[in-house]
Length: 152
Image (cartoon, rainbow, N blue to C red; front, side, top):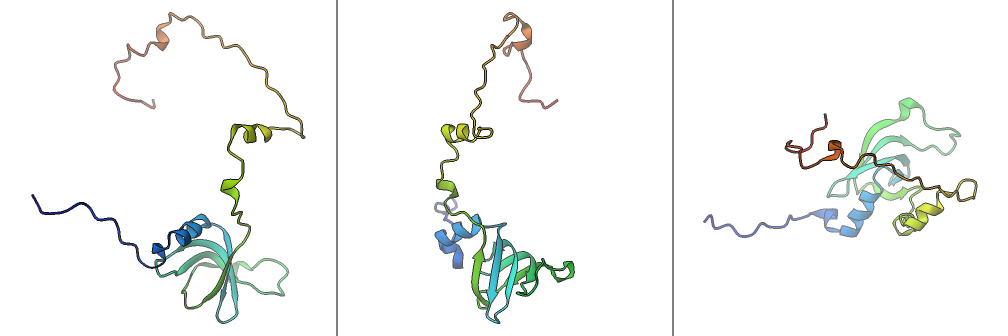
């Protein structure tokens, strides 16, 4: 015996200890976000990840300019920026539907309702399956001596 006890559960640190915050932030990975920093500047990009110290990594980042009518110039876009929590005043995730998982989208009736074309539900006509000769050796699973599944 080595004297070791049962395996210990991992110890989380920092923001990783807050399960609700962590769930929310992992749910919005890939979303467009605006990060407002203490200097008053706002940066826009795609939320990538966060550290246990709540450092935010944002991809395709550019500084938002209020009088700019079109998107940023290519040379103004930074691949990735990491924002320290001491610099961040506000993080806003845009176009995030917080009720998506609770909406009725995954039941059979909801899926059937979405199969309408121009508001009209089209019924499908069932086709009788012709299985062929039931004595055929082509479908005999017991005679297959292979071991496992072969993609070829």
